[in-house]
Image (cartoon, rainbow, N blue to C red; front, side):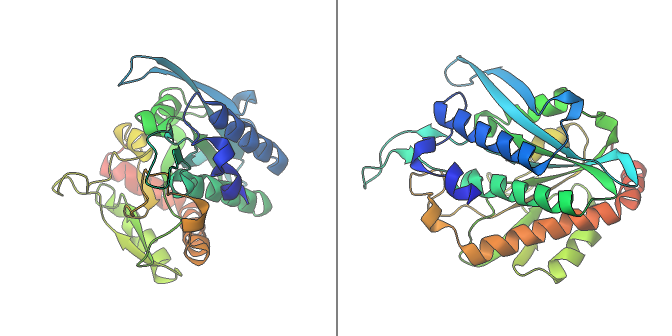
Length: 289
């Protein structure tokens, strides 16, 4: 239901600064409040101001932030992210459709973020989890950059970032996890999750020696965390024929794969939460922030 709302034609492709983006933001904000997510620093919103790389226009976006406080280590954080913006309205395709709905990219990850937030509200984690629906990813990870530059919690208290971007469909039933090349101490946890997942979980797309476009290290919002020295796990699928096209619509989402992919990400966050002391120790030993 969340995905259907976000990817509807009425949202107009959710481009940062557009009325459709604002409508999506208000919808998500209402969900954050309905779920009872804590407002870190007293507010669920964080302004994102930047100059467009292609048009030199000043844009104003908004990140949405909600916190579930940990029961054992409330001052230690996992940050779960997904971007809710997309590319808006553009050139029409052969069908005459010019709305880039972004059902998989990234209404799928945003709706998944709400599902994870609902789960952890009902099943409180040991460590605090900050849920961030980020704006302006499509314009250069601007929301993630703003979050890392001015975090609502101490940056040094963020142990790991889990990012979702395109988790709604894959013809081969494959879900990739990037990040373990840079942070190999995360690999055992991912392998445990992969062994019990309902989808085929593959590790990769994170090596600098890959052909252009195949290294996803900086391809989505986790890139801003990585540049700040914060370990990440990025869950996503390989590009499909509807990527960044008006045909990326709700009808293309595979409900069975999507549900299993979201369950896999949930399992990964639970695994990290249960082992965050060991993850933090391994991170320190590896020389990360």
